[in-house]
Image (cartoon, helix red, strand yellow):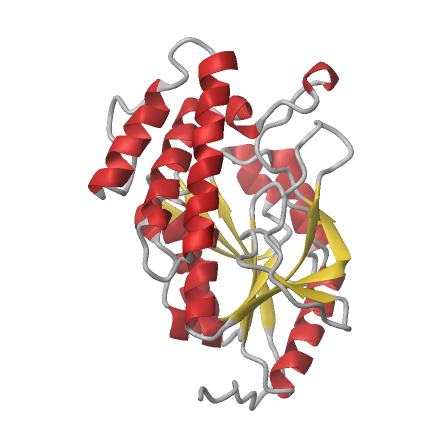
Length: 301
C-alpha cells in the first residue's frame, strides 16, 4: 500500500507558462490577472518586443530557448525551475488562458487540505470554459466513475493549462514526454499518474476562460476541431494518438475510443477538408506507428 504524501510545510505555489509567438494583448491580461504571483515563463524561440513588454510588470523568471523545442520540454523546464526556487505547487498555463491570483490561492488551499487528509493528488484544476468571443469549442472532460461531495470530480487527465501540479507528484511520476513535442502530453502524463497512484481532480465550481484550438466565425460555429487546426497540429495530433495508444499504462478502453475518434475525424477531413488536408495526418500515422517522435520532420505537412 502506498504511503500518502506527507506535507511538512505550507503549500507554496507559483504560476508558469510556455510561450510560442504569444498574443501580446492576451499575455498582458494573463500577467495582470496574476499580479503579485511569482511567474516563470519558458520562451520557445525569440520573443517579440511587444510580448516581452507584456511581461515587464510580472515577478518574472524568464527561461529563453533560441528555438522551438516543444511544449513538453518547456513544461519540464518550468517545473524544474519552480522546484529550484522551493515551490511545492505550480499552476501550469497556456499563453491564452486567463487565470487570477485568487484562483491560484483557492486551488492551492484546496489541494493543501486534500494532501493533509492523506490524498495523493497530482493535479487540481478549474474547469476551462471558452471565452465570449471567437466561438471556441468547449473542452470535453473524461470524467472517471464515482462522485465526490466536495465539488471535486476525478478525471482521466486534466488539460495542461490551469492545472495546479504537485512538485512531489511530478518527481514521483516523472517528467512530461518532451518527445511528444506538443499534442497528447497531458493525456499520457495523466494516465501515468493514475498508474502510479496519483489522482487528477477538477474543481467543478471554479472556472477560468481558455481558448482551445482555433477561433472561427459565427457562420462556422460547430466546425469540428480537426478542420480548425493548422496542418502541423493535425500531424502531431494523429501521431500522438497512436503513440499514446501503444503505451501499457493507458487503459485499453481509452486506446479504443481515441483511435475510433481519430478514424472518424479522418473521415471528416476526407469529406470536408481542404485539398491535401489528409497529407499531414497520414504522415503522423506513419510516424506514430514507427515510433518516430520528436519535432515534425521536414515535409510532414
